Length: 90
Image 1 (cartoon, helix red, strand yellow):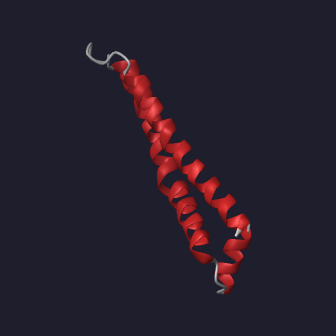
Image 2 (cartoon, rainbow, N blue to C red):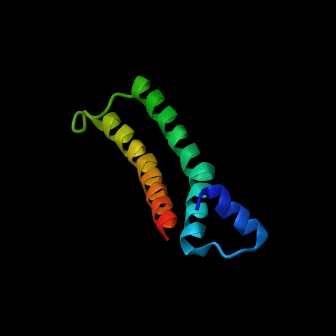
């Protein structure tokens, strides 16, 4: 069941199942909230890296920030793709 079919079934009022609902929720949350916050975090981190030196205790602070932002995006894509595969086999 593709996302288009899930949305079409949802609009028609057909039952789409719990996995389909979770897929839609994750997709909307990623597009509306997470992606914008990650982009904003990357811009802020780049500006801060230019103007603010990291503390001597944490010399790799900006690398850690970039890794955390990448992990957030990867986690949502990983979760959504696994739910999509589970939904296809049900």
